[in-house]
Length: 112
Image (cartoon, rainbow, N blue to C red):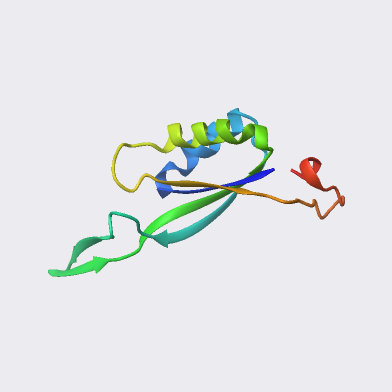
């Protein structure tokens, strides 16, 4: 099992959710986060004063999937979030040792 974490632009969330539902993903955890990468934030003008926004609003998705699904999930997220502009996001894949469904006590792949 793997845990796929993706940090994306907030306005792309609905596109990703719909695309993942089409390929059979049953559950996603979504967290509103802030951060920056190469873009290093940006400056904004408010009432004539310029100020720097260091951390940009992003959305973090976490999806627990079987190892066989990982490449497909990465492709789906990439295709549905790519704008070609800086700040499109990142995808991280980590090994997931176990998962437990609290309600039934199921563990492993059956808990996903």
